[in-house]
Image (cartoon, rainbow, N blue to C red; front, side, top):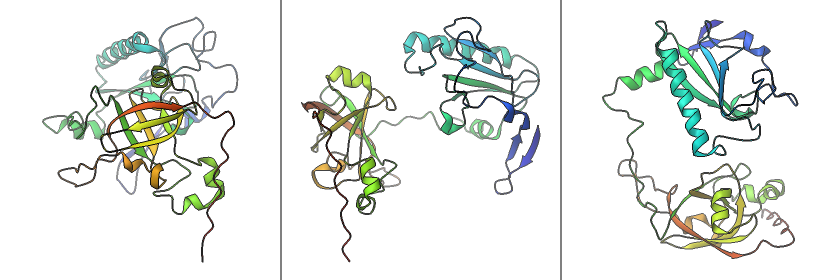
Length: 293
């Protein structure tokens, strides 16, 4: 282990050469599944010392959320989450009681995009011999600046019980006036979709590809549904790259932040109705619009 200093920020950076030897996305024989190297028996939730620790002296641990390799934190339900949180608390207390430990960090590893080298649902616990800079800065405040909650200008209610949010998709940019002219990008995401969680879709009787009407107090938009697990069960998402009747801003809220004056386009209340079944044949992508010179 070596400690370097970032020349731009001045922050200390810990470099652990030995962690390069850890398993990297094994295609078979997951060590976290029952019968694997780290879980010889079946389990609900389990912890063990990290074989490739970032810190010495047994200060790095791994927590397995479930024995289901294809699961995630949402799929284990309230009872499963309770077991994980209880284990977090137990290990935090045990590690924090050691004289040399000043700070215990619990964090989740999820997906190769953030550096997780094993897909099995798990998290880690690091026990520091000092308080890192970010929590040190947080402790200088009288109150937790991250904990203060201010409700949105328009909250959900009985009439409009679902949160609506909007944003971009990876193949499009802003209003789409440039990216919607490129056939390859259009074919990736040819029209706006209403992304919703499987639990919400089941409650509303909606299947993937069904046409749905998303309504707010300002208007409505009709688009196909896309059932995904990457969104909260109480929220739907429609990208904003299309104009006219496909424009997500037909239903967004115009309230302004009192300080920055930025519109609250990212959150409002909506309701959803199914208007038609999914077509039997997939709709072909719209042809790219030719540039006029």
